[in-house]
Amino acid sequence: MFKRKESLNFYGLLIQQAQVIRDAVEALCVFCETPTQENGDFVKVKEKEADTVRRELVDDINRTFITPIDRDDLYRLSSSIDDLADYAWTTVKEIRIYDIQPDAHLLEMARTLLKMADGLLVCVQNLEKNHAVVSTEATKVKKLENTLNVQFHKSIAELFEADDIKKILKYREIYSHMNHAADKGDFSADILLDIVVKL
Image (cartoon, rainbow, N blue to C red; front, top):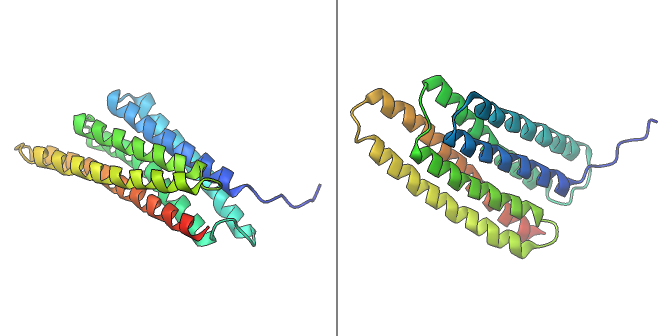
């Protein structure tokens, strides 16, 4: 009855977290296509789920003496990929605050971010046993960050062709969320590549 809880599976928790985060980004894509209250709220649901899994992982790190991955790398990876879900929800939240509609540029960037989240999920799924796949997919994720960065600058350039300063300020903020999310995806890929070298 009072037996200490067995250590959680770190790889399993990372996979669970990456899956929920991937689903959160997919939910953002759905919201950008059909910006209903329900679709926006679902992004928040997935973001909260991701936070819950991350808390479990951090708790397990703190109570386990030996971890299969360097505990600092484990913590940084979990934190970095979690930021993708955070940015997904922040994007929805600020679209509502600014009372604007998702446009084609935002949808395009969201779809690229989803590809990054897909790649990170594949990386985590193969982290325990197939390091070659991790390296290949992490490299693809890093290239996708460059793709999104190009999309971001294109969207900003077109935005500044308008004369409506309020619209410019609002959409620039939203586009920036996507660009920052891509930076976190790129950082996550770097951490995964570092982990593979160490294992």
